[in-house]
Image (cartoon, rainbow, N blue to C red; front, side, top):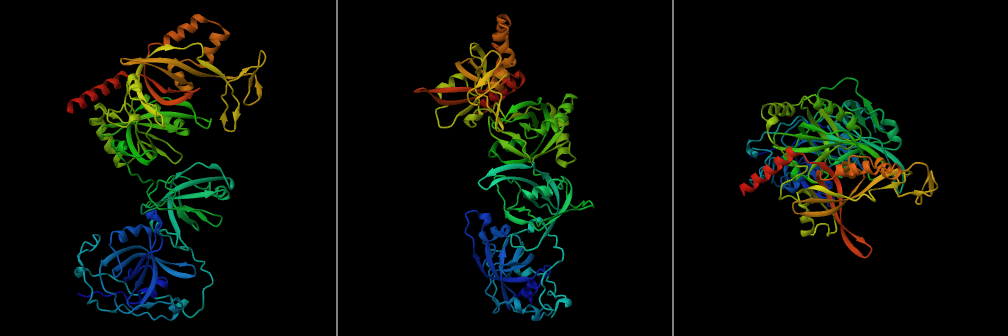
Length: 628
């Protein structure tokens, strides 16, 4: 057996060759970065063509090959993708892709370190036999990627790179003004000096402002997809935001160059890339006027809804389903005091599961309103969710974030398959919700409980609150303190909401804000008793949850009792709210009252009982019990 290394491979690569796909040997391999993050570790190699050797770096996407022992010292490899980049005044070969030809082999020839100063006078000769590898042996641990033995391998090696004659004996080139070569996104790495990519913008985030130890700033990011399916996120800060925020449009194709590559922040970046691009004042972003059909509009990695049951909280993923219900858009007060819109949909797929899809902000009035109209017209649209965020509060659900995209009835193979299934059998099939009413056996905050289990199981007495779902009936409402007068003033970006008192006949005063005003807010602080077949419990419901129970604004009820003093009508409203059946989502936590620890049960959400879904849930419980 004999295999020949490519003659003059090292000088050719240093001279600028990127196409010959030479056969070289790894004569040294070492780990130079011992970061605990395996994706940020770097391996250094020394490559040899049997005459010359040179330092090289292995791209991080190839690290697994070293850890799996698919390339080692002595391995003969064929370089498939590579570049030569200056690093600290030295030219370093960066290996982006390669194929192991022979895993174990003795060192071939007597290679000497190649000096870059030798490049102009390095003699390039046609490809010929440099050394006979009579000492090479295959230890039967050949990498699975080759799928053939060394004896049957016949590498196709192009002639050695010939430097263009115009550059010979002309002295040093002071600056390379030629445009950077467009490379695939997958080939980007921080060791490249000059690069350019051509890609389509698939998502664009909102401009956000931030404040940290270095001061105030603003930031926005967008996601790119190229013709090879590579994806990467691009981030802009401060003055760069002003340059590019209005330039970048979703769906358009751009060429981008002169950016910096930084490790991707996986807490905020869901793309399958270890790097992200940060643009600066020298970066170039150019719109491609001609449409490039080789670059897809979007790239999806759909997960069946049933898989979401085992997905971690806050995971970002793609999902597709048939919309089976659309709820109205409602205002929601966020934790920071800002009001936003929320709309909840339910989608199902052929996995036999359905899940809540929560739309936030502009999604409610844009895609949400369109879906509402389609649903009201009796149709069942298909919605594809790109980059939805998983939430495990009271079961699993999917929510929109700033980079989420929704596609209604998309022209995708998965959508056509789903439509065919739904029209044939899915419309009449029963699906199990993974968002609520989860059957016994799941985590504590995802299962149904009875009222008596709150006390019997000691819920709420751990460090973290317990979240449960209970089907119960309102048996009593405390009416002497059902709401309070609240401060409407804003403190920063959130409302004060502290209790206010009268300051004269026509004004209110907030001690916290130390201000007076003519109008105040009225917010529920409702205490009620709920009862089921096992017991009774006191609960507290604040503004949003209390409005779901009372179906009457707190202000109107307050004025009815204290201003109009219409006790008869007030009593009728209270009476109409009693003995209604709800599915309550409860937060249970032990709190300190004076010197005594008490368990507080708070109503987070109160849904009127849907007897159809309750019946299905009970049938599923019975079916599961019978199978045990």
